[in-house]
Length: 190
Image (cartoon, rainbow, N blue to C red; front, side):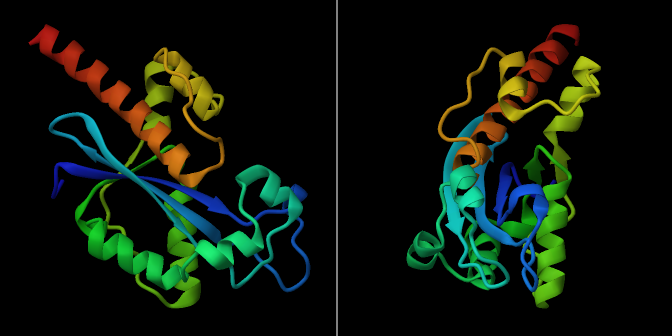
């Protein structure tokens, strides 16, 4: 680990019911949610949203209902995918910070889109999947929803589901609950 600051990542992607995209369109990232965590203090530092202007798909009503993003809102508030990568790498320690997610699919989606667009991935090799740790701790093989995972630690989801920024912040809260529990239990056994 190169830094005591971690990046907690959640993505929102363009979507259609049953993943049935119109001809010529494909799934793409429309928001990076990023929350920074200070591992030495076990605290959340800050949460960010990087909305992305879509170039490979349109935003369906289904996607708007799920994520809250409309095509117009993304065009007004968003940035290019390349600009979001530059900000993550330059201002948020990209390759020098371990990335925490609650799904293996998050980093795969970033790497796939970077490769497709000929852009360098802003994240390094340090990676932690909090859902894997929850499965190890609980023995639950079913993929629990984020609110269900939080409830295991007597936490409620805060914000709006399928908001990259809110989801990343809640994943950070979950990670901190797991880390805190581990530190307390290890300290008691040493």
